[in-house]
Length: 639
Image 1 (cartoon, one colour):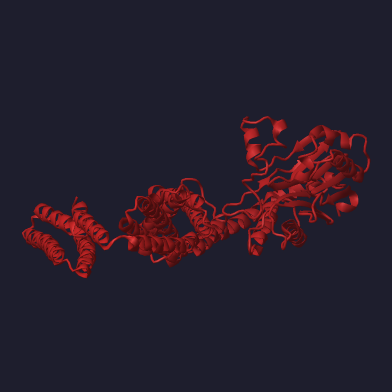
Image 2 (cartoon, helix red, strand yellow):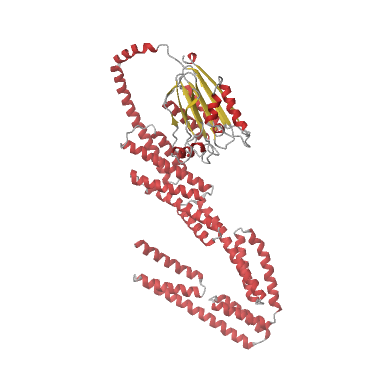
């Protein structure tokens, strides 16, 4: 047993710092032939789940069940920790940084993700230190940032590889390193290395003979800085006082000779294993393709969550596929990787829509569009069966983003147009949830438009009442009341409060009108009728003329009554003539369409539209507009 012939001393300190909860965790196990040391830093905010502890417990369990020291073992342990965080995530994603150190008491190797670090000390100096999988570390590697700025840069915690991340997970794995007596191996979380420099680490091991003294020395450095907030910190130190030395090493040469004689047997065994591997590889490819096919089916149904699950399984299976570059199987693996990125973007895009983060959603759906094009161009995939969904959600997110931005800037016309487009595209694919959200925003916009119109009409009414043009003022107040009522019905609280105020103004204005002489009231109503007639509001003009005629009848002025009767008859005749002209234009347009003369038909339709607008026949005008729009759409489709 190697452990009995080696001396490894391990000590550690783990504290919560200024916080109530310590998200760090450290554990180790030393078996007879191998030892495993694991440190982790939980980087999520879920207080119900201890991400670091959960991940480390999984690694220690896997190691204890199947101990060893190889790149494959390290990858296996890391992926087990990564998978448990994905499986245990409920209300929010579980995430953690981690470093694993393995040794056979003679050599060592390690793997890490995130910003937990390992330091290898020899003869009082740092022989090797791991690099963080962070944006800041990449900037240092690319010589965009000085190395002494790494611990303080704002992107130091922006990780591109960590436990619990979505999509592809690739830990950093070292080669095997030969240990020597007196080496020191140290594991630490970011709460340590952000506040302790290389020089202080070297000082901490200088002349120290006990592992616990290194830990307490570094802790003293952290606490001596008297920071307002002390992050969680964990320090683990392994003193390699004596490595394992094989007493039978000289006998190995004899066994080598024996091994040569067994070559033929081993070759046969190798061929058997090779055939088994080929069959296993074929099975993995078939399994990967089935996951991919199911994922595409969910893509076609716009179920991006289940599509992502299937593509993620296809991707995990693809990691077990052995394929040389430029081979057909390699191309299949690359295709699956692209699909996994596509569904990940779509799934996260839908989540962003639920959170109403439309800018983020628009970017994710645009990325998905690009990946779909890549699948079509580079891998020959038929994307037409699910492209509509991607493009539709991309259009929806873009229009919702534009609508919200315009609404916040009080550009209600643009906002209404954007929300209308968003509503229409969701209606096309029958996504009632997102369609209703767009409708809610439209309602808010329309309420604001009605409020703006109402305020403008009310201000006009105030000016007219000041000028003692009471009938005009009353009309403006009535129109403003209608706009306030519409806004109130659409949920605008301010509009509800304004209704009572405008009603009081209407009562006051009617009182002013009642104080006028009947002759003045008659002249005022007639002037109003003339203006309404000139504006094409025939029904409104006739109503004012009727009011005028009623006053003259009360005064017994038959001459004025007769004159008003003629005016009403003339107004009705003009409206009837215009309506007849519009009807004639419409009949001529239909005849032109029957003769395939589209341009002539459009000319007649535009004339009919102008006539209907002149007499305020909005319903007929809308029907003519619909016909014109259909003709234009058909012409555009033909081009």
